[in-house]
Image 1 (tube, one colour):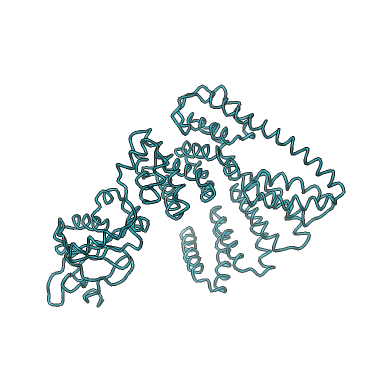
Image 2 (cartoon, rainbow, N blue to C red):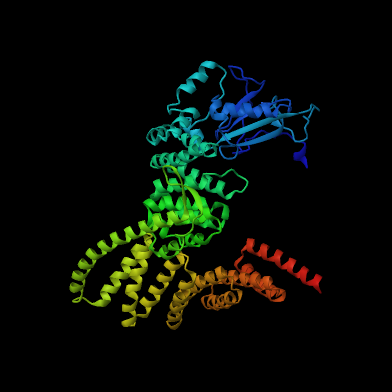
Length: 572
């Protein structure tokens, strides 16, 4: 209770450090405010009356940007900077009075407005940027002179984006990382050509900066993905820009492909995802194929002509021979769409896109056939030499090569090599190798989205592990099967394997996993309306977690059990 009336030290809301009393600055600014900075880089402005908070906010933003109003008006709250307010502040004592009155009864109405620019913007203004308030204009000018990095105006950036002058923009972004932000803003332009130019320029510029500042580009990619996921945000061009960044910097951002393809679940995002997949596929087809790219096949049957057309275009760029028959069925689809091919917008029909895609696939197939012919000759010579070798040694070599291909994301090559090695292991009755090969094959199929194909392979590996009494490997395999049945939403099969896993946990004395399985079993029972069974499972799990002294899980389960018991009493 005492803290409500006692004065408290004024502290920065971002870092918690005590702050100095704000001071007046020269030259004088628009408002009658005092200014200060915190060691964490935040700036603050004091509105002594508490009636001019809006003006104080603007002054704080300008102060943080060192009076660069072109930059200040371009920044977005939360995205580019954080803001906060501290009320009931008394500038005379530099203290906060929670009651709104000092000990001598004087009213306190002051408000401190804080602004903290994000790190990339701080660094763009100068390394280790902390803008200290000064009492003389001379000192202020000295600090400005210390900034060595060059700054570019929005108008300069926009002019180069209109010209699609990526070479000059790449030079500029190395001097001023905020060039990326200025290009990003153009994604929301009313001019469609300018928007597409912004997509292309953002990819190239980010590719230039990533070698010097990968964390800045990484933050940009994440923000764009969040914008695309946020239905309330203006997200045109966000996914297309992500696609271009991945296309230009696949070695750094290739892992984002799976997140991007996952967005095909949203009908509104499908054209953007498919365009991005097609652009990446032109340069890095294996990067797309090593992800769950079969989801693109489903889009060939979409009711939206634009989605069908973009899916065909993407698969053509990927030279996906697996899609030939599906694409062939669309060679009679006369629906018209407009597609941006990376240079210009083209109005065409889905039929024409399908024919062009088939030509690309056939051309790639012929080139690959010619390469295969040469490879086969070499292989024949190798095989002649290998006939003198042990076939089992050849199978082990294939298995190692498959592991390497899998690690590099070359899933098709990995599948072929595992499949080639497996029958040799079977012939020689190498059960451990058979189990390992089946598991690896299933892992690759699962990575490619083929859940049905992976299931029997996992089950075969499980049978061998059970025969060999390898409980640890068996439990790992069961967990993978559980994930598949969770994907299929088959609750009965899910329960069967959960109970198998639970038995193994008892043998292995793994209480942590057992508690997790029991909780999952309880959740399934609750969904099925079997509340008494669910309660039993939760209670056993609670007992295990209490034994492990897992306080957080105990609290969650106790709360859930209490709610379930209350529900049962109410039903009775």
